[in-house]
Length: 497
Image (cartoon, rainbow, N blue to C red; front, side, top):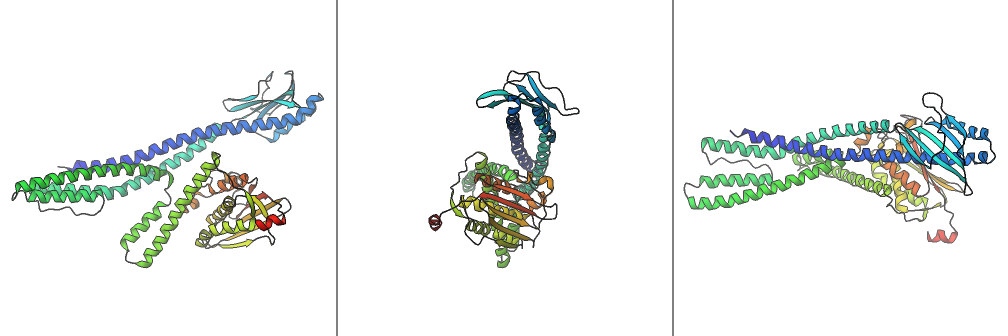
């Protein structure tokens, strides 16, 4: 009986897929947690250092004129910041000049003496010392003690990573089941025929060939071997020579199968991590082409859908590369005098296919006169197209999108408004964060990674501008406003722009 190997192939294939996926996701999860821990520490410390510097400048006059009441008034403003638990001002000699402690469990006395500039983390608190320097003279020291909520932040991250891990393993399981149908069924068919040949000694039996890949080569080799064995009674020497040749071909086919299996594992690891969402439509399109390949209209429509999905994959990878370049400081702008109406038209041209595909109505309002900015034309156009794509994705089909550009003496403003799903008030700031998504199910439907708004914000900031999100709440649409410094260009420069 040879039933064992058939089951073993299926189980091993599933184990390889799941183990590879789990290992890849585990490495990424560890990297993200470490990165987030370091980023949170640095950002928290930098924010407190900056706050201490501002507080020191505000209190410098009080130190000079020995006015503790004024210093305490400055410290009292910290009541508006619940994360600050205690604060103090010390004189240049180290004497406690003024102090502040939040009432309740998080209060407490300030240190008796100031320490050197820097920060320290103790459990769920972070402390900062920063000297007050005016005109190169040390007037005193600012002390701040604040909450350090790293554990809660990491808990949120781990929850998200756990969900991604479960979803990825479920997808890998489904993918493994599909691969079993492609790889293990022909092998099981070979096993069944081999069992019948051994039991009945009938060398006229053959395995039906269903694929043209390496497994198909193995089936051909197996069938050829049966034919050679069947002719062995008539011509033993010729049969032996043929058998040797077929054995060599089988070994080559098995080696090719091992190489293909290794490459498949590497591919699956990358696929499960980066490009999961657009693959299901592509797989369904291939099934349609297999079943209805003769129908030209269906084939054309299917190919167009596949092209859209492929463009989506390219856009996702491009977005990831842009985020990587920005976060590593490797994205350089080629700024030149640029007319804002040309930038808007370019961004609209890029986003128009998605807007049309979603059945939206787009209205555009541009200044009557030329308005100029110092900008990288391609990158600023990318900001506009990302905002339009975001509006199209988060608006139900048949919605309305309005793009308007205006300017005053100092700045240029471009707004993109829609009547889509809207944004909750507490998400207006975080919506620009990396991988932030206002509606996960909708984003997954369109294959997004949640980096479009992040890219738009970073690119606007690289142009010395900003982006603001507005929304009256869920179901009431949203508006994104880009502001940039206006470039005042002479008539000669306009002629060459």
